[in-house]
Image 1 (spheres, rainbow, N blue to C red):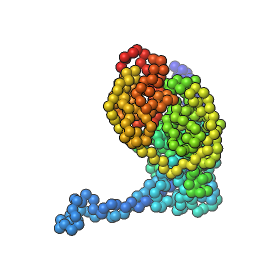
Image 2: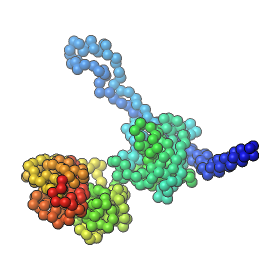
Image 3: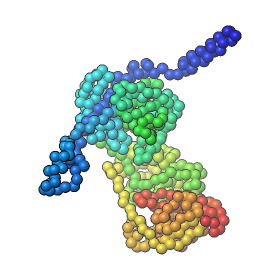
Image 4: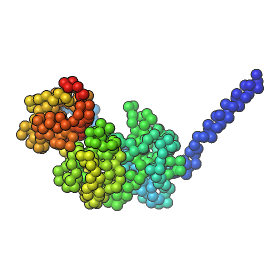
Amino acid sequence: MFKKRFVVAFIFFLSQYASARDLPDFTTLVEKQGAAVVNISTSQIVRNKQALPNLPNVPKDDPFFEFFNRLMPQVPRERESQSLGSGFIISADGYILTNSHVVGGADGITVRLTDKREFKARVIGADKRTDVALIKIEASGLPKITQGDPNALKVGEWVLAIGSPFGFDSSVTAGIVSGKGRSLPQENFVPFIQTDAAINPGNSGGPLFNMKGEVIGINSQIYSRSGGYMGLSFAIPIDVAMEVSNQLRASGKVTRGRIGVTIQEVTHDLAESFGLNKAGGALISSVEKGGAADKAGIQVSDVIVKFDGKTVTSSTDLPRMVAATKPGSKVAVQLWRRGDSKEVSLTVAEMPDEVRVALEGGAAKGESVARLGLVLSELNAEQKNSLQVKGGLIVEEVKGAAARAELQRGDVILAIGNSEVSSLDQFNEALKQIPRGRNVALLVRRDDNASYVAIKLDEKPGKD
């Protein structure tokens, strides 16, 4: 009996020992690279709009004003707000990378090294679109990071983060790469690295290391319902950050390319509608008049499959490719148009600081299009002028296939497939050419955006 227990215990010990040997040892990495990671604290003067909070709306010349003035506690018109973040040294003479949101709006920035030395820092430049900032301290002989290659990173690979979560300097957390090339809402220019390394407030701007001790990303965002870590962390690839920092160092700003189109993902249903063999590329849903794409002859319903020789696998690839292209460059663009491949030459324009498009809609009397479950109306002259379009049909009622495709009352249908529509007769005629049971692509404008929606035609006549 004793022998049996001894054998079982020994086997368990061996299994645990083997498991421990399989786990990575981060100690050497932290010892060698930790000194290049810094704590960043910022201060900002917040100016109050009024000196007396919650004071009733009493004019200053009213006798009661002085009464309330004495009762209400006085607060200063200005107060200092402080926040914490992380960063890492990229050159021995004091250049440091961090997040734009860490230093944005700061009146004062203090950088603390692992040897407890503190320096005042100045902002060289910040780029809100990628959330990258370059700051500088006056020092020399500093330890610096080694840049890695995010493109060589593999999903499932071990990674390590160092930063100052909640102000705890030089905190180390580890995890694996959960995904690559992630797109986040309102973040078109960064193919994020997703990890499950624990990232919390204060980690922002800190480095993400691979097992070679190379920085492959800047920890930037987390997905959280509580404000704390929930297993979803996102880092900006270091090659993207370094390209931004090089421009910031050279000119204090970032210049990006722009071609003047609105795009959307090509789903399986839309691919079938446009005769593509597989879902891929970027579908053009609108073209800015007079823009680079318009001058090159690119049209609504074109699918961009290659840009400057690079394959556009997903619609999220295109904004990054275009933005990374130097304005004024002439590039080849391969399109899929009406069942054929076509190539055009395009001169990339420069992206302005802000691009705003304002559109309005309207409604009118309706007429039914039963096959799609829609009631549509033709635009009148006033509505066309308001929307700045030549034609289109307003959605009055939605049911059946259209409701399943999530069309809404007030949407404006600008085209069916490759053909623009300005009348109900034109729309119905185009619809007759599409067999029942097949997908039809409608270019739908909602609020400020236009995008294609695939709707499967009902197979039985009169079905709602």
